[in-house]
Image (tube, rainbow, N blue to C red; front, top):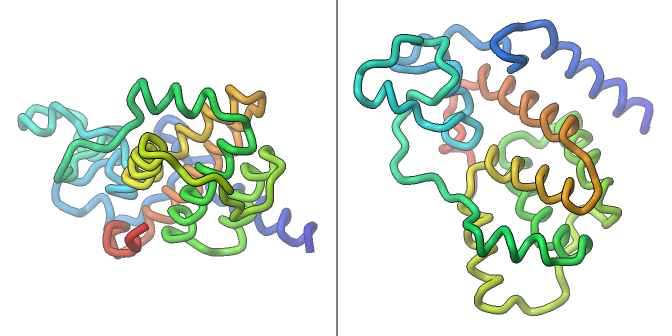
Length: 204
């Protein structure tokens, strides 16, 4: 079974390889880029897209569909970890950090795509933490930790993946390649999806 999972995963990654645009690995469906105002950075909006394009907002973006920033409307300022949140995560023991963050990441990833390939790629990241998938912290979160959880749940999937990458690196688990592969895989899937991700994500 493990060999089958690895083969399916390899096939999926090979299918995403060999395309341009700053290693995005996307073979985008023409319907995506034909959407009014859409750009390469808009793929997967709002969960997987890039930061909003400041030039497009003022009508002065000259890169058009090749722009690597998002041209879609963002209803509010994207949630992000502030200095206090980053310090809280940095001070946690690795297992407690993983038990707090990974269940949120798992739900967000599975809401976007729950196929065997995606679950295997997520499993590669979780394996670095040496805890079972779906494990949760046994201690009752204090108010500050509850606010941290709310922030993590409010973050876009792309921002959360970046935070997971940084967090695991700080705990001695370099997962940059695995996180990047998962992100590129999900964005490639989003590029072929007709339904916006915001309509498919459940309330976490």
